Image 1 (spheres, rainbow, N blue to C red):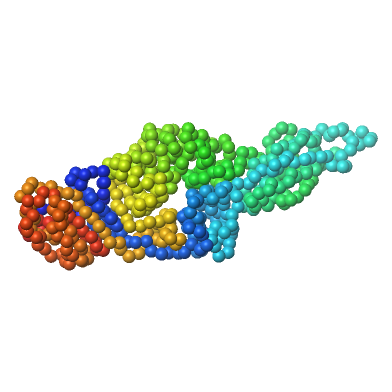
Image 2: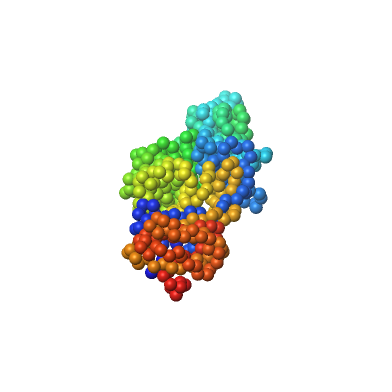
Length: 547
């Protein structure tokens, strides 16, 4: 008779009775890194940085400028739910970053958000550029008078009816939607055979009162009902502009006719392919104009039956999680997107539990973790947790991160990792927030007001307990054992029918003897603990059966 665990260890499946667990699954798997197939101690988080002057920080982002300069930690206090996106603009000279969840949507370049000694972001601008609240006014110039001698036709044959709109422009070159149009006014190009006074005096509307860093106003003109075309930029605060730009000198057509401000309640900022950002408010998901993250046309909004809880960008599209059914939004352009409900009735109970896992997303529902991949969705922990066991974790408290192929979930009662098909592992760690830095392949945590890096500290102490192995009474003729490990000692505990048979520190790879007197025991369990990596656990009836 033997009990052999030659590697390939699996995690916990609390749903199953310990007698019915698969051979390599665990009753207890704590503080273990199992990717090597062994029972290797995971390493504790280690201190990386303090977060100065932020009261109880719980949101974290590492801001790294593109020129190789030093990184900055951006953090926000507990009680906020902040989502951060880097600029979708290639080689953004301002190195902008965007975020939601701290009041109205915000943004800033490196020169703005890293002013002073912290905390960061130290300053910001509201995302978007507001349109002027009033239309421009127009009037004819004072020298526009019909000639007394009738030497030319009046008005000149080249006269056109024009109207004007004005946009606001930020220091980043971001442009607002246009103002309301001015009244119509006649104008004509200057020419030697035409009377003077063909130009127009444009009175600009007041500047919007905002925190959007508006630096200029941009003037557009339409002629005889055509498109609005660029006339000129004028400095913010300019009162009037004398338009003597000829028709042939007009510039590009107005691009920002629908470039609305994002809704001030928008949150859940998410990066999509093709230069698109997405966010949500209420039951509405909004999209920015591609590569114009300040512009959020109302026509690019989608409504859902239930309030939106969060978003996840996957290779199949944007997963929209609600208080009802999840949906999938697909399309390469925000002007041509479609939505489809997924056939699973699992609401999302924690926005911070949503994690993109590479081709699919995981999130916490009332019944367990749900995986959404393509047009399919299912509860992937239904063979791991019962509903009551899942509820005991307080899933509404989960904040989770993708790291090393694992779903790392922190909750009220601690921390666990989940890998589909392998069960769960638990860790003696608590954290208020975190951030996975894909550039450094590092999971950073917020712990007690400081930033720590997962796996950068000393080894944890592991604890792994086997399933219950059942033998007929009188057949349990176990007499010896061997622990193969990368270091010793390894604490070994053996239980028979719930009674401790052995509790001993194994100090090397040599065979050891088991106490006699337990041949009638039916139910056997093995447990190892310590700070050393265990490769295999072997119990046998004779030394020749050991490897």
